[in-house]
Picture 1 (tube, rainbow, N blue to C red):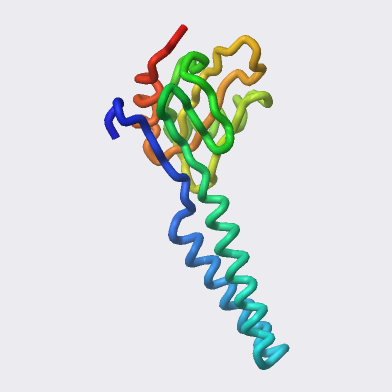
Picture 2: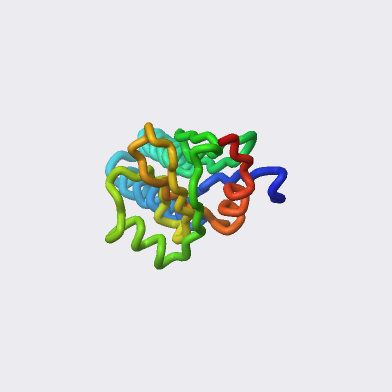
Length: 153
């Protein structure tokens, strides 16, 4: 996306999670069909498959959006005027900032299947959160969109 259009990313779970979850449900079906033959096994499997789909879909539904003077990461939103320094991090930098060098007051929107992130400084004096650390498949594009946000200060 160009800077004028903003940025919009859904942190969807990878296809391999869906495949592994399906194999888990298939294993459950095999276990249940041996123990409880008949339609009960299919009902249990159907419920398990529905729960798996709901869980994976909701976990991967987190959005990262930069638009109209706002930055939204998951359920959190911040106005452009409170966005400070922005840095696109590689996998090693993300690991350090999320682990050893982490600040417990920071807002984190991290996904284990995304190894890169963007660190966004919060410059609101009324907000105790020092920074946001947000996973992204395209951290450079997200950082560019955040840098291009018009500041009203």
